[in-house]
Amino acid sequence: QVQLVESGGGLVQAGGSLRLSCAASGDTFRTYDVAWFRQGPGKERRLVAIIARSDGTTYYSPSVKGRFTISRDNAKNTVYLQMNSLNSEDTAVYLCAAHGGYGFVVPIDEYDSWGQGTQVTVSS
Image 1 (cartoon, helix red, strand yellow):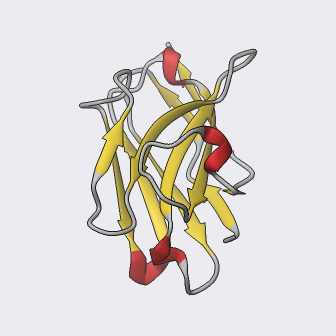
Image 2: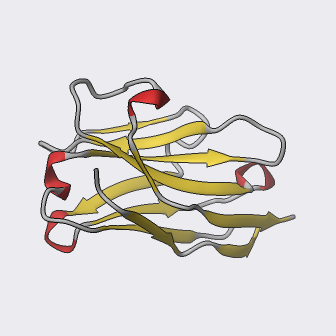
């Protein structure tokens, strides 16, 4: 497992942008796929985006594709989520998670390392 700490959340107006960071401890970060999830008030935790450990392949949920960009800097042990054209539906706690097992788009239960989350609030 790795220790994950998110940052960069806050309050932003609709149409604005934010960049979230997920900083990891340890020297094995590059061996993990990393994902961003979000959980809105009274809602289930849902996948937002994933970035692969090997070649940086990415996956986005349809609700954010074209607006959000996930990236990673293995030298800094950090994964980023650039969020543009934000709307009220994006309001949620955003959490990063990592898994070192097989597969790319895997069930949420496969993620065994989680951060504490960072709040993103979009005002209309």
